[in-house]
Image (cartoon, rainbow, N blue to C red; front, side):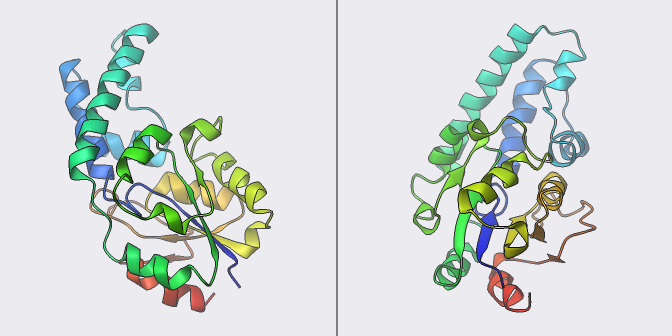
Length: 213
């Protein structure tokens, strides 16, 4: 029986992975670095590394990189205010599950960006708590974010499940001892999700899938 569901945010609850890629690619281009989707998937969505490592490899010092990241963060927040969309099937799935399990969000997004994304989604009321990037030292694919969530819930991993869209998210969940449902999106659909409990086409399949676990 699943007592708690730990939802990833970007690409699962809201359609923001493409927006993050877009703002990062445009920022790096101004620094003379052409970021490809393949690089983004490998560095960010698989390894959990910063794509700004590519700028460091060009000899930029930490101060210049920090300033460039701030530019990206500001541009990303501006895009989010106008273009954030809820992923298909999410409101219906959350309503169906709210009386069946505790729910929380475990995201690598900065809390500021999370709050901008959800300023008008009306989704946050479904969740007991939200863990954002500032709440942990090591981000996905390290298990720390999920281990922290389990401590907050007071539950063993076998009584919970994670819902992710990326390889790094799946790796983090599995390293924390969690089962994991994966819902790929247009950015992550070509990734390798070996080890997932199930790979679903949309969030609409989550309630019925959980009934079989």
